[in-house]
Picture 1 (cartoon, rainbow, N blue to C red):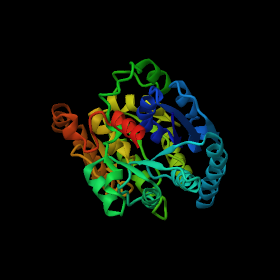
Picture 2 (spheres, rainbow, N blue to C red):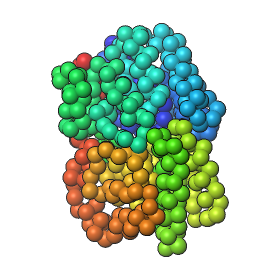
Picture 3 (cartoon, one colour):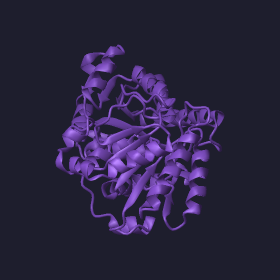
Length: 377
């Protein structure tokens, strides 16, 4: 029986890992282990550990790690708490393989701990580039700490090989988060309405914007320009559904800007700490447009047939399809880009082109492919 341990720290990585975890859970030759940490255990970020349990998973270790504040110092302390908690978790669970996704600081802490325990690491979403976030360096560091690599595109697989990793350990798996049609959820409209107050037939724009950790102002100008630009669409009758940022340094600034702005547009702007992965996907499937700097706009939104405006430099360098429009943090430019996303021309592309043509991260049966490989390794 192979013990495969998934370490998850945020609503975002869990939403991508969950389909793979379901595949492993149902396999007779595997024991699924789950370690939840970071944002999952924080009331400030929605206690998303409850979503994992609601999905029928048993969590083997819960590691509270978030330190008060959103500074560099508090982030480093949070990383230390993840490693401290994993010392006990890995000692108890004795996994044969650890699965880590992405590029966040808690993922780097988990990878470092696994290396010390001499546990092989399988890493998802390596080889990518996000020049506007310190996570870019974390991602490549995790790649060098990992044994096996599941790349979302052939180009990213090639980059991992160029970094010196063994070609036989690098797999083009696609991104499980792009498999919208393969992982249908039940109708979530009633739950979505209760959580947001948005009626099923109301037009809304989804806002998901995070700190830009490589900038001195942590992206304050990006947020301010985006909010000002969205006012043009509030006047046209669109509601705005804003999800709060992740736990990166600068998150309190972003949260405060969105909260104050929402107060000025009470009744039109809805804010939520976290929708969770299922409701967030529901939000993408029914929104008119997505705006901000979230990776979900590039990786998941195209599969939901949702056009997106990517503001600023946070995702600079990351591949995306034609339905994602890059724009600098300029109010008129953001307005023009949203207009383009809402246009009939964009709608025709979104509805007329197969998902494989819209989304470079899509590969059929991605989650199943990853799970089968994990069991073979």
